[in-house]
Image (cartoon, rainbow, N blue to C red; front, side):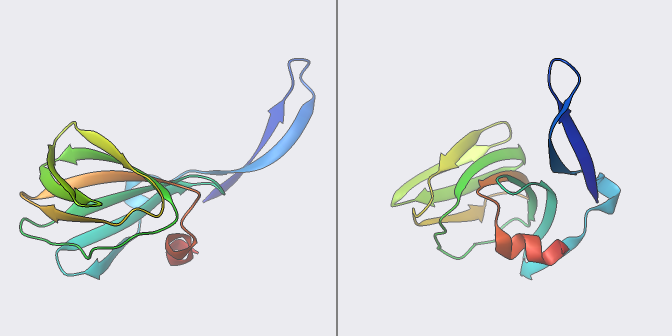
Amino acid sequence: MGWRILRKSSWGEAMSAMEMSFVKTGDARSFTPEAGMVRQVLAHSDQLMLVRHFFDKGWVGARHSHPHHQLVYVVKGAIRVDVDGRVFDVKKGDSFVVDGGVEHQASALEESEVLDVFTPVREDYRELVG
């Protein structure tokens, strides 16, 4: 759902307008791009996108890269990540960044929930929620 927000100067004058993305948990649409993974595209703008992923234990994602910078926060569970040949395990409360263009892969050591923030926005994901 898009909201039109007017930014105001310190004198109360409208400076610029922007679209605000507001997504309630119950309204988030779920997608299953591959077995063992559920994706929800949450709030986003032209520059940022928040995505929630749920992984079944044993899920192994495809090795890939994309031009977007990706900040990852593990909400629940534990995942193994290979970022450009460096392998590490991350668990609930841990976070890391994958720079755009860097090859990476993840797998779920446990049933997991992960939040990803992408910049710039992932147009391929935005198309899912139209």
